[in-house]
Amino acid sequence: MALTAGGHTVGKAHGNGDAANLGPAPEGADLEEQGFGWMNHKTRGIGRNTVTSGIEGAWTTNPTQWDNGYFKLLLNYDWELTKSPAGAWQWVPVNIKPEDMPPDVEDPSIKCMPMMTDADMAMKMDPEYRKISERFAKDQADFDEVFARAWFKLTHRDMGPKTRYIGPEVPAEDLIWQDPVPAGNKTYDVAAVKAKIVAAGLSVSEMVSTAWDSARTYRGSDHRGGANGARIRLAPQKDWEGNEPARLSKVLAVYEKIAADTGASLADVIVLGGSVGIEQAAKAAGVNVQVPFVPGRGDATQAQTDAESFEVLEPLADGFRNWQKKHYVVKPEELLLDRAQLMGLTAAEMTVLVGGMRVLGSNHGGTKHGVFTDRPGALTNDFFVNLTDMSYSWKPTGRNSYDIVDRASGATKFTATRVDLVFGSNSILRAYAEVYAQDDNREKFVKDFVAAWVKVMNADRFDL
Image 1 (cartoon, rainbow, N blue to C red):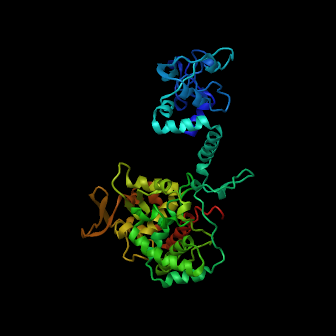
Image 2: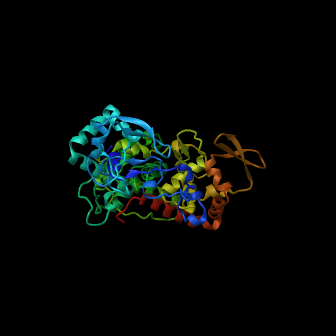
Image 3: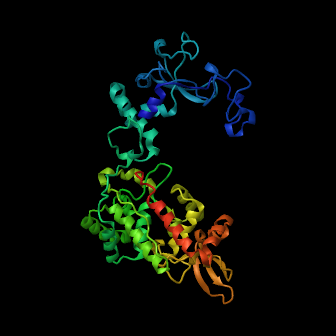
């Protein structure tokens, strides 16, 4: 409400003319318009004759001043429905006093009729909104404070946590919508933590899936989500279907003890668990590799987590783990692409991660779709080898399921989803798949997988 009222406290809407005189929108306008749209080349279209939204008038008596005049007019007058000169429906006050009328935009000696929209009327007519309107009308300082905080949130919401802010005007206060994360310990013995994880006896799939689920929430669009903070152990993430709560609870119980014993944050232990799983899987494939790791993640508390705002981060599908909550109009491979772009992945990184996670056995629920290997748990390039092997053909068996069939015997060798097959169907993705399918690129596949994996794990490490 503060944002709406504040936005309507200054300025005016423009509809004092014939909307039919406006040209096309920017994308449909002629080249010479140079990106501008709705141009009026028929009549005067500036000043008091401007037409944009079609609604005409100011909301307040003094539309160039910051005050609570919006609430004064809204609450002190009755309003009736009328049409603007451009034909838009709007509300005007009944029997307004001349001194309450705003000035003309070109000649201050001319008084004009103020107006309100349906949204403004809701601020008066809805019982709950009216309580807030009356509160702001009586307390200008309260209105100023609430608006300032709402404006700051609106204009900084997509900047991520406060650690990304720079400059002398960064507020000292931590705000919950900034998803604050306490500083983590950087001085513990990483090797000792990894040794304890190995000794815990978790499977490659359990370690890799938990680390992935913790990090995959990251969104480059607003820098929210990610592994830092270990919010996967908190509500609402701990109960998300895509995070497999039973498996997650088992793994976290192991990790929490390791974190307590070593001084590492749980967030770091989760990511290190993924590193351990990948190193074990690479070794099983005949490649020795060490997954890069930088300690220092912190553990957020439930009090530092706005559970309601985190609900929108819940994955409804994750092609990397070959899962979707239900069938959607959007195709599974399109949902995969959307998640990949949110995480800032390139097409090549998306390809190598999917191929690697399939052979690691990290599918949601342990399904076998896309696990094109006889050596699950080993970080091999088998997914790409079998995907591009022309001795197989693919047969649809349902809305999102396929069999890979031996052309000679007719026997079913593997099963797959649309997400799996798109890497053989799409020409660009197939080009990457064929690179990784080469016999002499097995080590390249592992190294590229590790690089892409680390990119996902560190996506929210703005301190690096």
